[in-house]
Image 1 (cartoon, one colour):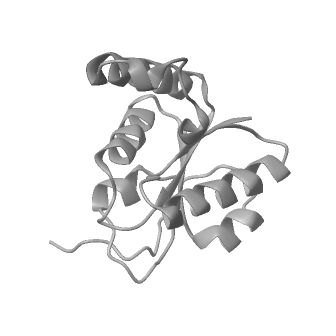
Image 2 (cartoon, helix red, strand yellow; image 1 turned 90 degrees about the vertical axis):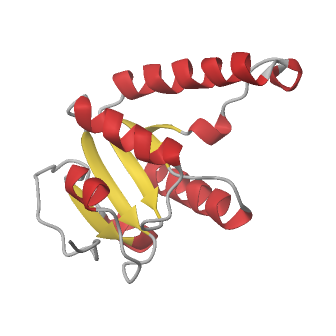
Length: 145
C-alpha cells in the first residue's frame, strides 16, 4: 500500500513528528511518500514560481498514485498545503487517516469529515491496522456551529 504523508514541516517539532510518523508507517512495510524528503536539482537557484510548480506537480502526481493519505494534524492550525492535500485526496476518493496530535485542540469539520479514521496521536498510528479501512464517526474535538 502506498501512503502519502501530509502535514506541515515548518518548525522542528513538526519535522520531528513527520519523521516519527514516516518511521512508524515504514515499519509496517508501507510505501511512504514524504513531501518533506524531496528536493529538485538546483532548486535553490530556481525562481520561486518555477520551484513551486515543480513541487505542486510532483506532490499532485504522488496523490494520484497513493492508496491512502495519512495527515499529521494540529487542529484548526494547519497549513494551507496540508488542507489542500486532504481535500484533493478526498476528491480522488483516497482513504484518509487523520492523526490528531492533540485531541484537546479543536479541529476543522472539513478535515474531520474527510477522514475515514480520526486517531489520537502517533501512539494510535503505531497501532493502526492499514489492512482494514472502514468509515467511522470520530469523537475528535471539532469546531462548533
